[in-house]
Image (cartoon, rainbow, N blue to C red; front, side, top):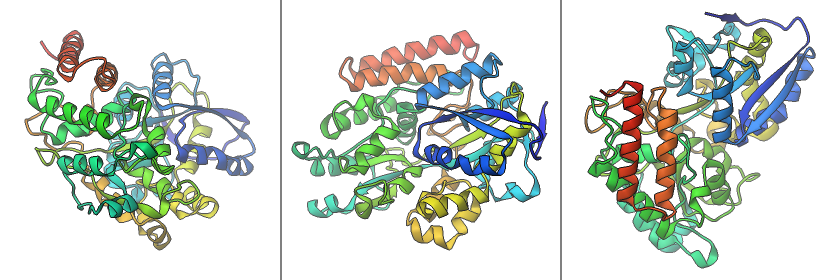
Length: 425
């Protein structure tokens, strides 16, 4: 097992960094010139990709040990699985990094056998964003903890398609980390789950049908056209430009929607908890985008120098100085949430901190389950399973198939995969 200790670079090297095209990572790339100024022997080569493409590229690279990338942007889904396979370098940041400042629930997801295998760039749970001006105009009041029935009623009342205002925006782009992240959290609160204790798929259950029927019906009635093309970034753009009345998605969007430099509706954004379905509880959503170093990299020491810089308190302060406190990476450091400047700039700060603490990826579903994970299933097979089902769900949303047929197809597809993998006999 490779364990890295932090230290200065001693020879010139070029680090190739694979990252996602989310706004926080765009800022990281913009500010990375500051790192290169203070580390003139380390040069950075950026490969910035759409989320689904990034996942495919980095998975192929690390599984084949091709060494194309020196730093990977990966999630808390991949970190423990890849670490156990020996694909990631263990990290040992020095005392000045203050690893104890990382939120405990986030740090736990990146730790295997007591060692960190990635450092968190930002972390998120889920919340409901809504337009306060549209709610006031319609005479509506958003509860602190809305139900999905209430969300549908609100969406019906604030949709104004003639003016391109859609009552509800949700992820529709197929992908295990795109539409299925949202759909899995929806299914959990409707009382459904992916597998029973014998690893039998449960996509043909009444709970999955109720959840998917709600999802397809709500987006067809009150969602924007072409919803199957909309992932996190597309819905962020729609909401920020005034085209969404409500949006249920990652808490990290708060720093973008409340920023007047990036959002046309910054002064009218309200927020509430993620909606509750008939089950009323269940694991919700806990995700972190993290920087990790593949064991195949030939520049591991220099790579750790950059990874610790980009996830440090120093970097948080740099973003605050250049882009404002509202734009700093959220969900990772206790010191960020303790900052009076951040609390003043980000009215959602304490709400998000609590949501991440309570996301409980190992919490109970309605029926006992053999797996962990909140908006994903923490098994290696889930990339394939989630991708398969994501395409099937998108087909139901676009009207190519019915909800019933989609779930029948998904059940058969997942059953084949888990049988072939040996999970289900």
